[in-house]
Structure formats: C-alpha cells, structure tokens
Image 1 (tube, rainbow, N blue to C red):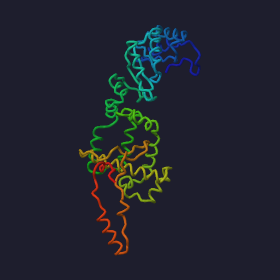
Image 2: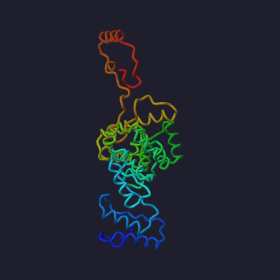
Image 3: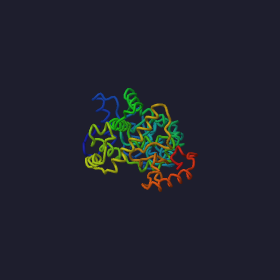
Image 4: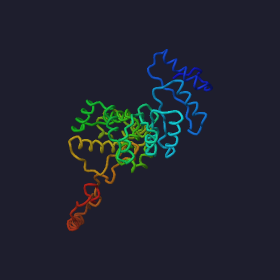
Length: 341
C-alpha cells in the first residue's frame, strides 16, 4: 500500500496516483493496483477525477467493480463509467447475497466488456475467476458444481483423501478424522458460500440464511474437550464423560449428544458410499449449523407396543395371542424412508 501521508486522507488523488507509479518503479514492483474511491455515475466532478487518474497512470486494465445486488441500475451505472472513464473489464461483487447477479450480467452486453472476476466475500479465498456458463447455472438454480470441485481439489490432498476413503470402508473413521475433515473444509472458505453452489440451493434459501458458521467452532470445541481414547472410541462416551466434555467445551450435554449422533449418522452413510453403495435415506446427515438430523426419517425406533410383556403368565399368553391375531404385514411404500410405521 502506498500512502505518502499516512493517516491523512486529504490530498490530490491524481498526484497520489502518479507518485504511486513512481514509487512502484523504484521498488521494482511488477503489479500496481490503483484503487479509487467509490463514486456514482451521476457525479460529474468525481467522474472527471477518475478520468484524470486514468490519463495520469496509463493503466493496462481499468476494472469496474459493481455490486451484484444493485439490480437494473447496474446497466445505467456501467454505461456512465464506460463512456466517462473507459473500462476494460468488470468485477462482480457480493455474489453471496440474496441476488443471483442476473441484472449485473447485462453489464457485459451493454458495455461490450467482459466480467473478469467475481467475489463471494471479503477474503482472498472468496475472490475467483468469472465463468459465464457457471454463473448461468447459478441463476437457473442449477448450482456451480465445477467451481465447487475446483475449490475441493485445491484444499484436499489426494493421498489424504484416499487414506480417508480406506478408513471409511474399514469402519475405522474416528472423531479425530471428523475434526480433520472440518478443518479441511474451512480451507475452502465459507461453508455457506459452498452450500450455495449446490444444485437447488435457491430452494433452501431460508436454511442458508440461518446457517451458523460458528457452529463449526462449537463442534471443534466439543471434540477437543475429549480425551484421545474418547475420540478414537465414541462408544465409551457414557453420561459422566459427556457431562465433563460439555463443561470443558462450554456447551450443554444436549449439544454433545447431538454431535455424537451426527457423527454416527455421517460415518454410517460415508461407509456405505465408500463401498460403492447408496445409503437408504431421504437426506444427508445434518451438518453443523443446519439444524441436524435426517430429512424425513428418524432411523430405527423402538416399538413401544412390543417393548414390554406382562409378568403374569396368563396375561402374557393372552397378549401374545392377541398380538399374533392382530399383526399385519409391514413394508409397502415409504418403508425405506422411515415412513412405513
């Protein structure tokens, strides 16, 4: 960052821009980004200033950053900047908002300039190259699976992924592995933005809006409050252990129970997938921050009617006889989804 007078925002922007180029040449910098203050196309004075800055630094590229949520005004603003300053490309920001960016896409058609980059957040990992076909898929709520795959390939090591698949197939997947997977996901950026790339994400807008990224921190706190033995063998987590873990992580016993249940569900599902099967469930195990649980089914439940028998031999015989006569075949539609009760 070049600031000739640190802490002082007063000065001639054109002069500062010129001095920044001179400073960059002296320091042998290969790239210089001149970031101008935000302005509206209707502000003639600021538009003239932007034009003067361009003439002063003679840049290779002039990128117009536009808010994806601006709506139909995007066309008028872009036209004003292109005619007043002259742009060579467009950067589409705030694609993580409610708007899908459809109106902003018309900017490229009106100005004849390409959209080069897009962003879904404020971090460097949220800045990505723009692909028109992928944006079209997002607008049509078909997801952006290719970008999701690319981000996954950048964050996940192939050897580690193969090792994890073997653990799943051999049923040796532990809470340590679960924690490692969450940390790998974090490297990919915001989970909310990743979920938004999935096909049909538009139909889950309410769930995405309510998605709590901090739930992952809470999950990590719970796992780190466990001993090594407890992470390797979650089955040993009895009531007293869960109470201790809850206190150590600052959470409740209910939170600990929920995590253990989610882990069991995820491990079973991934084991089935790792062996080439298809899990018999209507939805994915609940992710942290999304409310948890299966969609539609509740898994195996005890039949309360079959759960106990009378201690009186005569009464028990009568109950058995009545149960035999009253039984009906089970199954039918919906049984594999937990609906055939």
